[in-house]
Length: 114
Image (cartoon, rainbow, N blue to C red; front, side, top):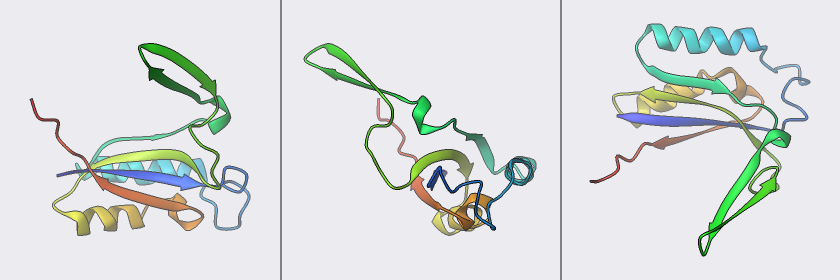
C-alpha cells in the first residue's frame, strides 16, 4: 500500500536547531529507502514564500502568493513510500531526519475510482 509522509516544520527553525538535519542526511535517508524499494518519490520543497495558491470558483481562477493558510509549521517536503501496512509506514516516517525538529503526517494514498 502507498503512504504519503508529509514533513512539516517551522521554516525559520528548520536549519538552526541543534538537532536539525543537514541536506546530506536527508538525501542519504531517501537513497537508503530507495535502495530497499520502499520509496517511490522523495523531495524537499522550496520555502513556502515561493508558493502560489490556486483557487477556482464559478469557473474563474484566482491566484494568491504564498501558502494556502498561515500556520506555525509549513510543508517542507514529502516521501511517497510503499509499505506493507500503517505500522511499517510509521517506522519509515520515524526515521525521516526532519522528524527530530518538526513532524511527519502519514496518510494512506486513496486510489481514484474510475
